[in-house]
Structures are given as C-alpha cells and as structure tokens.
Image 1 (cartoon, one colour):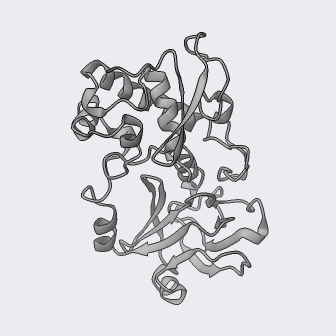
Image 2 (image 1 turned 180 degrees about the vertical axis):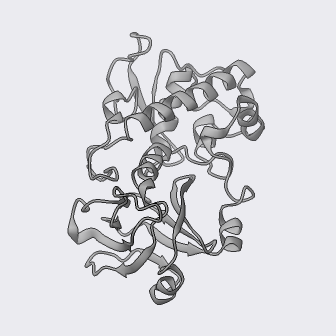
Length: 286
C-alpha cells in the first residue's frame, strides 16, 4: 500500500483540480477484479456531477476531494492504485474517470480529468457525507497525521504500549500515514532496534524517533515517493518516484550499513511484514 509520502505526492500532483467543476463520473470497463466504488455509481454520479472541488486534501494514506456540497470523495490506493492527471500506466487498469469543467479561476493549467487506476483491484473510491466522513476518519478512528505530531504527542500515544516500536508505528489508529517501508527507514535513522518495546524506550529515543519521522517522510516527499521493483507506484504525472535510490535499509538485506559502516543490514519478520535494520547500530536494549 502506498504510504504517506506517495499519497502526499499524489495529492500535490492533482491539487490543480481545486476549483474545477465535476462534469461527469464514469466507471470505466475493466476485465480485472473490480474495485469498491461506494455508493452505487448512479448515486455517486448524482451527488458528484455539477459540484465544485473545494479542496484537495489527504487523510492518512488517502487522497480526499472535498466538494462544495460538503461531501468528500476519498481515493484509497491500497497496493497499486493511483490518482492521475495523465494516462494511467496501463489503460486496461483504468477504473474511474472524473471529467472536469472549467476551473472557477479560469486557470489554464487546471486538469481536464482525474483518472484512477488499479492493477489488482484492492483500492476503493468512496463518497462520504460530512457525518460519514467524521465517523470513518475522525480522531477516534484514525490517529493524527505523522507529519503533525510533536515529540511529546508521539510519546504519549505510543509509550505505554508493550508492542515492538516497529509494529506500533504501523498502527493507523495511533499515528496515521506511516507504513512498513518508512517505519524501517525511520528506526534506522533513529538508531532504535525495531523489536524494542515501546515501554522500554527512553525520552531521548522518542526524540530521535520523532525527528527521524519528520526527516524521512519529508525527504521521501521531496523525491516523490518510492517506486519499488514491481513498478506499480507512479506519481500523478505517470512518472517513477525517486526515493528508492535513497533507501537506507529497506530491501537492502546483506548490504553494509551506510550509517555506521560496520554492520550489515538484516531482515526479520514482524506482524507478518518484512523489517530491515542494522545489527550493529540498532541494538536491542534489555
């Protein structure tokens, strides 16, 4: 599933749609597994067509189009989906087309359409009323965005957990936006072992984890996310991200650590997900 940097890159890539009017909504024919579109497409069209996109936002790992009616269209890419302003990587995987009318500011750069593609059928597009959106994505259901946290709020939300810090960082109810790839990267920069219990972390370690979270996520956003070997992630202009060329540990098992120069990157499994870390500079403290 795309993580915060990839989804934030998507959001920025389609931000030019702000102020545009939705002229049409089409569920395009696709032979692959269908994605979830809710409500039913005829109801979706009735509520969306004619509405203006008031804001282009993000909630955790989802892109959100806020309409002038108060409704929100939420795109959840999951493993391989993406919102695009250009042609999708493969026309066969195009799932939804939003045709856009003239920008309310007559911006010549406003996109004529937004396209949603998904190779595996794991993503979704849903239209929520304000009440439904709050029930689904309010702070009682989804934690604060990782980029908005202070060191104190991060510690307060996680420090009482007995879970391993890597597993805790993936809990979207605690902190929204951090996924498997960037959790490994964050803990390596912070020099914290991924299996260390949250309960055993010292205040100085929480400070380092928070600083590493901001640094890693912002760097990944600058490089427009990570396109891995499967090539499924593309940005809003149908181009590869660049942060995969700057990975510190992710998918680098057996390589020498670039941080300490002494250790070797190893791989373990936590909560059925691969974790990568340096055995020398990320030691488990008993």
